[in-house]
Length: 427
Image (cartoon, rainbow, N blue to C red; front, side, top):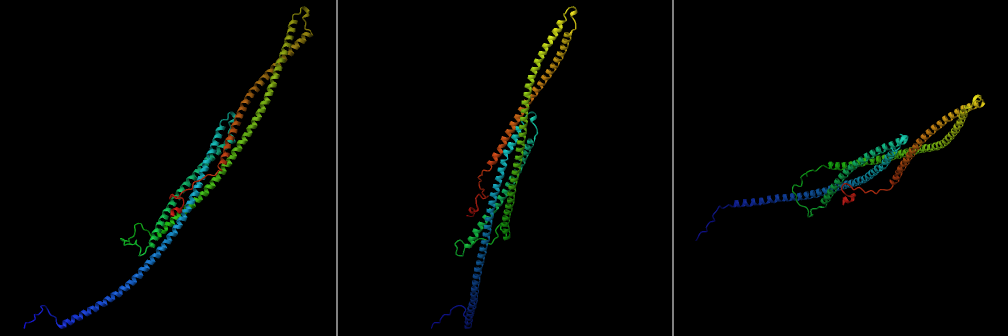
């Protein structure tokens, strides 16, 4: 009988076999207990993390909605402020253009005043006097120069304030654009969900972006932009009121000075007309007197010729009677009468000659004075003509004043972004 060969290797005892079975059972029970604990803890963790994730997502969605509301409110505030700035810029531009028109309107009065001064410099002789008209015209020129300087200063200030408003409007536009972009981003984030196809894992999403600021700084920035714009609008409003008041005051001063100048010119013209009329009356009377004097001179000359003939007759009689012969050469009554007649005639001729000389000198003086009065009358008429030309020249002031009342078409001013209103910017 053959023998069964034995299996090589270490053999275990029954006790070792039982111990191994017990150990396997104990290990299995331990692992099941550990697995059960882990499962319970995993379920609890799932519930806890699901709840935490849900509420975190819900809280952050609420914060996003609150942030969207805050940004939307500030966007509306910035839009309203920007519209106010646009209106104020248009109002200030209109006021500036009106001031520029007022400045341009001073060109005609200044030209007229200088032309009147130049015209009145054409007076000659004693008519070239420093009268109240010259004083008023020079005051008018000085006033117009001062008005031009004042208006130009207001125009420069308005231009500078427009630049300030443009800068404030530009800052509002930038802030508004940022708010709109941030609002679009936050609304897009609010619309995302776990099922959105746009979501994905990002590299280091929790990093702090470069240039980020705190909410307080964000709020202060927008508040500063609005406050700056409102301050600029307040300054612009005060400037517009000051410009309007200044224009009205200067216009009143110019009108008052214009009336004073024209009153002085009319008064001077009236006095010159009186002087001309008086001089013409004097000329007529002088001419009449000269005519009478010339007639009297002719009468004196004729009478002198008659008296000279009578004197010749008396001289001839006396001379002829000296030829009487002998005792007939006596100093009789005829001799005495002729001698008296010669004496009387010589005295008469001498008196007539002297009076004739006085008359001729008087006539010469009247003729000389008559020529002087004619020259003065010519100068007065020329001065009156210049005064009338000055009055006609100043008539351009009233026509220019009526022309200034015509309405002027104005082009609306666009804002710094190149758009005419903020609604286009919000689209």
